[in-house]
Amino acid sequence: MKKLSRNYSGKTFIVEIVMILMGLLFLVPFYFLLVNSVKSFGDLLSNAASWPTTFEWGNYQRAWEITEFPKAFMNSLVITVVSILLIALISSMAAYRMVRHNSRFNKVLFMIFVAAMVIPFQSVMIPLVKVTGWLDLANTRTGLIICYLGFGAPLSIFLFHGFIKSVPLEVEEAAVVDGCTPYSVYWKIVFPLLKPMLVTVIILNSLWIWNDYLLPSLMLQSDALHTIPIATFALFGQYTKQWDLALPALTLGILPIIIFFLAMQKYIIEGITAGSVKG
Amino acid sequence: MSRKAWSQLGQQLFFVGPATFFFMIIVGIPFLMGMYYSFTDWNGVAGTVAWIGLDNFKAIFSSDSDYFAAFWFTVKFTAVGVVLTNVLGFVIAYVLTKPLKMRNALRTIFFMPNVIGGLLLGFIWQFIFVKGFATLGELTGWSFFNLPWLGDETTGFWGIVIVFVWQTAGYLMVIYIAALTNVPKDIMEAAEIDGASRMQVLRNVIMPLVMPAVTVCLFLAISWSFKMFDLNLSLTKGGPFKSTESVALNIYLEAFQNNRYGLGAAKAFIFFVIVALITLIQVRITKSKEVEA
Image 1: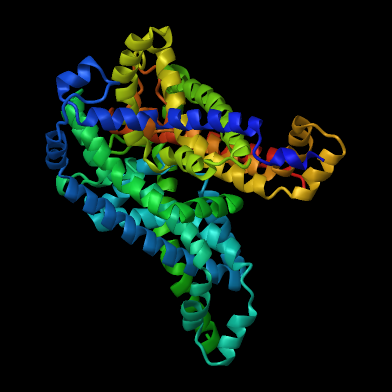
Image 2 (image 1 turned 30 degrees about the vertical axis):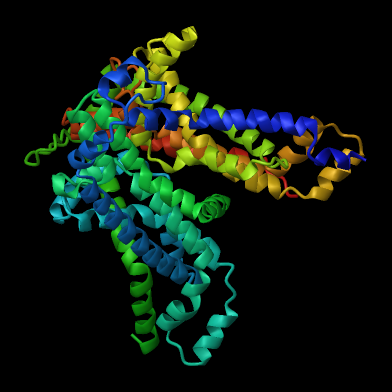
């Protein structure tokens, strides 16, 4: 029987070695980033691949101060967290109503949301700058968050819509008999049942919003509101080729999301898998 | 109106209202305005917006060679990027569904680049291409490393491709792994007992069953590469001499650097039409190829 080949054979061992080498190859950029971030400028120019001769931890202090890292981090955090929570809430509410009250109006509306997923950001951004100016949303965190609600709604509604269709109606009917209003049915019965899809929606949106550069760069002009990607971009514009400053800034910039990923890995992988099956 | 109708209206507004409202002011209305502006000479500084009919489109089609160069670049990039990310993602996924000891750690490593935003990745790789490759060239003497990375059209193109593949292959791997683990074991065993070789099982049993995942992955890869912006901006800024400028970057620069908002809106409108067409065609083709297990 061929069953034996499933066990750990010599061939599998060779495959394993090849994959480990490939994994190391994938990690090489991080090696370059980390070792060079603590080198002096001269050291870095003479050999970018070697281990640092001296550890210039002061690089990090300079990068921390020039990018005003704590401020950028807090801005990114507040914008991301508030946006993803509100997107999850309003999208699940809309999807719930559209599934349970499948009127012609809601059918058309749902079609519009689905179709809008195709629209590239570039086809919206130019007039968006004008609209947000009229509505006094420009250059505020609230304004940016409102933009994320608009851009995030279609995919999130689509994902919740597919999920809610599979939630049995009986529980809700029983709750109505027990005297629940439609609002408390949603909040007390349906919302807790959405947890798996909630995780997916939150993960997908948080990776997108945390890393987004273009929209915040169009919306937030004042330095005090800079997010991590904007602060990094500004640093590169101002200190061209100063790698001893840029590399520690980049390390600081990617650190929060890497930690988040390593801590939440299981949910992120599940979220992406679930999101793609529907998408 | 009856009480019931009022209650229904209240629920409709309460549940669907917020999402619809934000979507309309942020996406719906600006999108429609963009169509209008593509027929105007709007320069962004408010005041005068004059209707100029099809002039923007005429200008794009008759004299804007940069826009077509950007399109050609984007099409080439999409073709290469989609094939490489999917092949690599699938191969890694296929191997990592085998009982390797380091399987989980390897999955983590391959996926990790994906959680970092394109802008920061581009900057990190700029350093690697410019300084890291130069050092590796000195150490190894390989001419590959001594090419003028990001300094000319060819190395700029392949530089972006390398980073794009490094960034996105892991995401596709996750989707392919999910699909591969869902292939029923008994079907594969039956094929093996019938004497099918490993390649035959892969081609005739596994591939048809993971076609839905292939649909999704092609869809994602096309969408990412065709709309690529962040990576382009931070890695090459479209240079040297606009030779690596994607459509998304071209539209951005037209509007916000040259302050030709009307022309930018027209370019964005053409971009939208093409993206929509590609999406429709692609969903059509791949849906028809799916097989039920």
